[in-house]
Image (cartoon, rainbow, N blue to C red; front, side, top):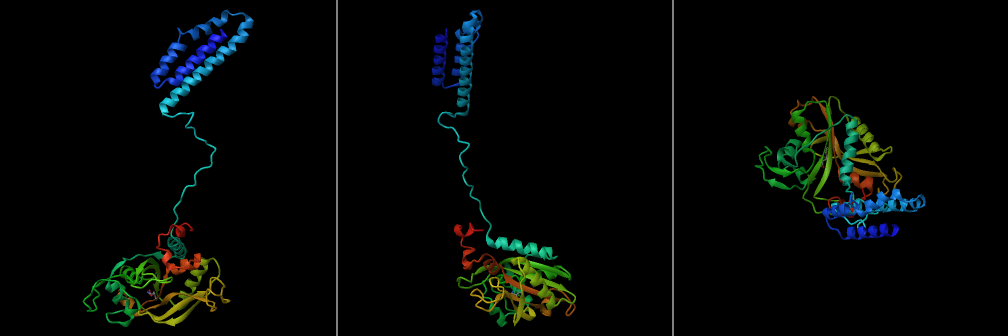
Length: 344
Ligand code: PHE
């Protein structure tokens, strides 16, 4: 009897191996395991065996039955999934594939940092167009046509203006100072804003110059806003941004939209002022332009002359990112070089 069970089991297994459809399997099940099947008869006849035979054959027969049913289920699965468990198994213990994540451009990171710091100081974030009228970029900022200061910023002109002081030409904005007037014309002082954004200059590129770069403008206008306010906001911002106590200093300079105007330096991020190769032993790093907003600009913004005062600055985002992440070539930001991008 044992022999016969073995034979039947082998026969079923062979048939299962060769079966291709669920119907084949069902046929095998009915034929070999159904009510009228030989296998079933054998199982039923077990009760008539002697005690010793039962002990020997019973577990064997049950084992065979279990194994055959398991194989049937397995084969059904294989057919249903169109999946061959023998060859197409998955090693769930194998180490996973590393997922390639994108990363943010360091300029985005720096811009987010700046926005966080300034909003925590009560500043609003303002915006302006990259394609700008000559008025908002130049005339309104106290730079009328033929003003020599226009030569300070080599400009991409989109449309020549009439040169009549009405500012109807069009340019790619050369600075975020265009946002000053746009904001003033729709808001009343007191206010404090920053305006980060992309600007353009028609310049040959090298490791520290790009034709397309970013600035962020700061503008605070109210009654009795002073240079001391500017120094204190700047010191707080740079100390937060670099995560250590920073010093700031101003040097006299000229920008038509501010009076007085200054260049603005911070203590060297590398040596904190002792002198090193980064700051050419001066202890200071140049950051950008700033000053007290010219009354002509406040008037173009729609305010009464001499009623308000304000300070403004315009700094390059690239310059801050280069300092923070020790990047030595400005052209890397827009290079699209994945080896650069992956580092952030
Ligand atoms: N707009 C100036 C520039 O791009 C920077 C600046 C902004 C200077 C505000 C003073 C005040 O060069």
